[in-house]
Amino acid sequence: MTADEVRTAYLTFFKERGHRILPSSSLVPQNDPTTLFTSSGMQPMMPYLLGAKHPEGVRLADSQKCFRSQDIEEVGDNRHTTAFEMLGNWSLGDYFKSEQIAWYFEFLTTILKLPKEKLYVTVFGGDQQFDKDTETVEIWKSLGILDDHIFPYDAKKNWWSRAGTPDEMPVGEPGGPDSEVFFEFVQVAHDKKYGEKCHPNCDCGRFLEIGNSVFMTYLKTETGFVPLKEKNIDFGGGLERTLAAVNDNPDVFKTDLFAKPIAVIEDVTKSKYDDNKQAFRVISDHMKASVFLITDGVLPSNKLQGYFLRRLLRRLMIKMQELKGHIDTPVKDDTYLKIADSIFGTYKQSPYFENVDKNMVFKVIANERDKFGKTLELGLKKIDEVSPFDLYQTYGFPIEVTEELYKNRGKIIDRQDFETQLKNHQDLSRTSSAGMFKGGLADHSEQVTKYHTATHLLQAALRQVLGDHVHQEGSNITGERLRFDFSHPQKLSDIEIEKVEVLVNEAIKSNLPQKMETMIYEEAIKSGAMAFFKERYPEKVTVYSFGDFSKEICGGPHVDNTGVLGNFQIFKQEAVSAGVRRIYAKLSD
Image (cartoon, rainbow, N blue to C red; front, side, top):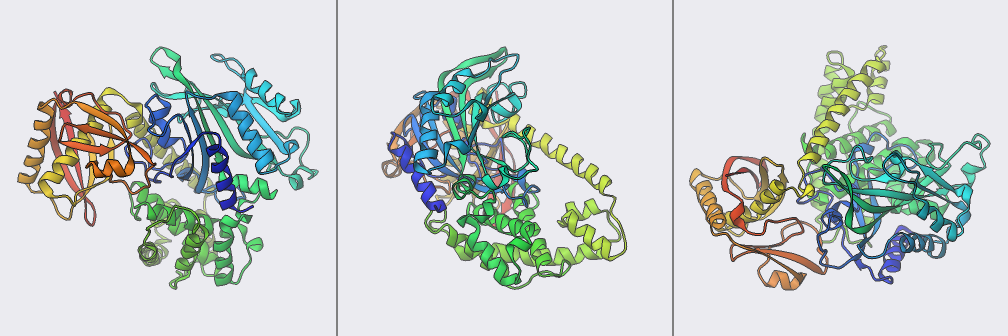
């Protein structure tokens, strides 16, 4: 089967069982500053898993494009990718364990025709707070999964929340036990080096996780865990990994999703995938991720999402130089553009690149290619002056490339010192990520809800003062301030800022009531509702209005009336990129 066939089969299967099919959300989360990227199908669903009513109902399914920055250094083996699709289905207080497990089992064995003897499942084995999930064990047994194919694990493996185990979860976060399905590959299972102690969660390569059903049951509060008002199902299954199981080949890069870029790389380098797997995997995965990110509005930079895009492009460029035999000689032709074009060809049957300007994507990649060529030249001049970690962090040199360059100069890298500096850097990054998570919109705290509501008023005021060309390009909200990005070609004058503040504060003092409506998307637009994000919307949408002042399609939490917001004040503005401005504002009593 092809990826298109598996994706279509999955969505059709769940549509026939009463699920509404949703379009994929952007890779850059809108209204959720808890993370830089959409890394799972669950992420856009968080408000609804916490109890908000979804305009499309209680049974939902999709194929969500995802990006996981933490997997960048892992790419090179046969299973890790930074960009992937996650097949998902959700029950919002409707069906639960028995239906979910039976349906997924039916999809795997009847639709995809995977033999049940090659399926292994894991369940939550219990801990000091929660009992073992024996109900799930019995459901799997009733479907014909044998005892020796069912493995209980602790909360580190079989408890799901965005923040980890029950102890690691912050207050206000939902979570629950889960049950993962693993596929066993015959050629690996028969290898004599894998003994009886091998199990689904070991890293030997015999097993590959293809899907995870989360039983979203609990909410963490200040005093401990309480049951959610409604029990939810949150399922996610990797399309690439599912396709690998269908092909009975553990190498996800052997699927049709990577066939076209790998063919281009073989042609331009005159080398073969089987002889240079690590480099081919890095180049094809990173280019796929880069194309997806650029089409969702990300540009290379040294901050936030742009930083990771730059890392992807520069890492793949180094790998290409390795394949061409000249690590220190930049590739200056259209090689990268050919690979990028093959990504568009791979996904021509999918909805991800509708109305995308390919030439714009090619221009971004070519500009970064030329910039990196200059950076590489500068880095090579500095190689005897700076540390290997500085070459990695500042100039984008992968450590293996620096080792090769050092070797050519008769020098040896202190790898232990490099790893120590890298670990310190990663720990700092994780701390920063945790800080983003703590202040995020998805916690639905009172103050964050106020700030999110204020962005609606701010956008309406900006359009009144500056013109209808203004539309939201992004936002970030903490408990202390809001940050709002919008389209506008120049710096706001002091008079313009004052006018915006006056309009917002007048709307607040008017104590405008919140009005929520579920509408067909086209009808919402005709009614005057604003829809700004660069993504496809489902057929039905939620529209929030505050009097005649603001009307937007939105899924985030809002206050009941504007009077509770307090005083609105803009305290900073800055440029983000050409044609995009950024405003910082705060609320006070």
